[in-house]
Length: 155
Image 1 (cartoon, rainbow, N blue to C red):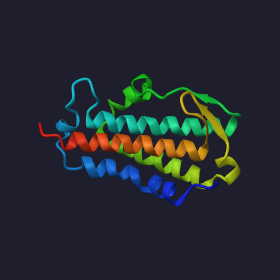
Image 2: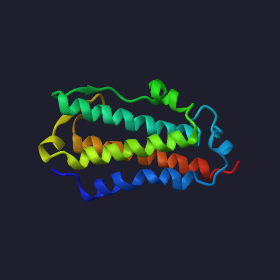
Image 3: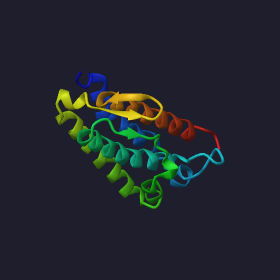
């Protein structure tokens, strides 16, 4: 099963919504935790950037290992998330875009047999690379919706 047109399109463009939602917003507002104890807009963006790196590592393991098991990704436990919180905005954007380009190249270059390789998610069971890609995109969309809500919440 090849990647669907929908998946390919979302991989190519969905992530750009981060910048459409946050451009022009006061940087101090992007760092404000509007809901105490919950991530700010910027923290959500850093999480998405860190998660892209985690997804790349998962793709690498799926390509090299037979049916690896992946535990639930928890951003607060990812050292790269905490490192990313310290990145200047331009570096964050650069890494975010570079890693998404890498994901796109990798997924567009692998063959159908490689797309059907699988790994086990601790909650969702056995998933093919196609399934993992859908999961990745839906996770990203969830955070985009959170970012939309935070940007549009009256302060």
